[in-house]
Image 1 (tube, rainbow, N blue to C red):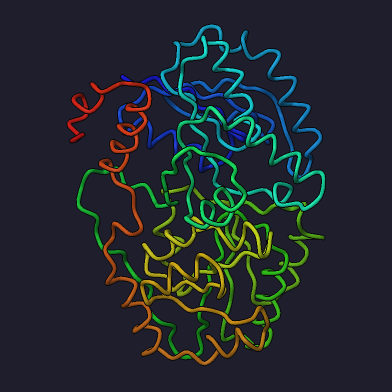
Image 2 (cartoon, rainbow, N blue to C red):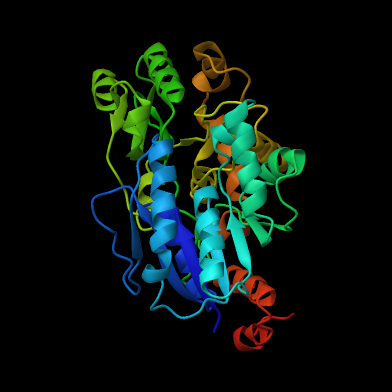
Length: 391
């Protein structure tokens, strides 16, 4: 069995749980260690994470200090775990710790760099950006694989800036469906009856103040023909007053957190459209990423609304699905979707539901393929035999 040490920036991030589940489903034994951005370490059921301490959003200096402190104590913290065959560092700060962990275990374990976002500091044109990109090149020089979620990250950052020579593997942010049963079509919401509103769902990591303002202005313009349901984890530090703003808007409603993937069918079954736009790092990371909500929304038949010129728009255009916004304005959004009728909506939705479900979901075979790929790095050729996967 392949032993993987997985070092993460935030144990509380739902995407971390998803990756751990993928690795375990693929047949690997996982040791999880990382920082947290909550008071307590979350429950991972069949494993006990190694807690490296607390970090905070938008506290770059504090995070650097926490990583430096963790590097000194890492040997003691990892002293009782099995020697890893592979070390995965999720994000740049954990790549630094992956190098430290590799030396602790004798310097032979391959390092895998997992990067699913490009922080704006890495794209800074001044001294900060040059320093961080230099650190990334240094820490990734021994990395044997790059795991990332969008081809734009490879094309427009890693290759454009010459950040790593490691081959890239694309792991899209698909939904996990590990039932082993054939995927079933989603239960789709009915178009609104006379007098009822069309509903736009904005779910997941809510961090974009520009999107919130645009949706508020749009729904006011539509005078009740549209409403927006918000669910997930608001990054409240990115808003002046998220809760107060939403309460004051007649057609916006924040309905709290949800369980992923348990609640996805229910929450997307309540909406007709999925907001797949993020201006948080406009022109940079937000233009390059392929977000979770893109796959989740399409899996359940919600018509995605994306911004032209982004990788999300390119993804949708290649498949001739979705709605693409020309400019981030109330006028353009109104022209795009404001006059939609039932027939047009059903046509748009039908193009999505006609797609192969493998476009949106990750199944056990995908997990096994990932672990097999990692096993080859570690010279674990027997992994292919154990998993029944062709080499």
